[in-house]
Length: 239
Image (cartoon, rainbow, N blue to C red; front, side, top):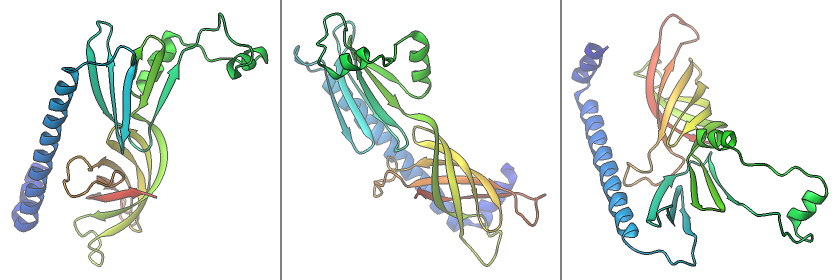
């Protein structure tokens, strides 16, 4: 396989050079963003959070930032990437010992509606789908950064010229799961069905800040020649 890749690079020196340059630029951009985030975190944690404020949270595009005090009263700042398939749930725990019977929660209890309980198993299951932040004794923040989904999309695939009449093949696909910026699913072009793995690139391509644009690699089996394989790469977006 390695020999085949090196052979392709030697036969397509110009294309290979552009690919290597793009990968290098992407890595340098990712590394710069990582260092900027680390410096920003250190600067914020060196400051103070007013005693009257339990936590500060903000959402900018796909970035969720939260500043709070931990159990040792140290200021903690964390930033999370939240994919469009994910989300954020903020739960405020309320004591029912001295509740007002006119509140919606009390009315729900009086009507016999079941109020979800919090137990170790529920917390473990929550963490399967993303981190759980507890900025205060009465607050839980569940950040869904991974899970299952169904997101139809369209893709442009370069498959090494499997069909000489189409240098770029159009595919229709469906994203089935996601883990942060990474995701995977199944799709089909007019020539072959395929599986794909993709990654959002808004954090590594300086001039592209479109959160739903992804790069992907695919592996397919042609309808007419199912004993052969097709490997390709390209981009995709959700509908």
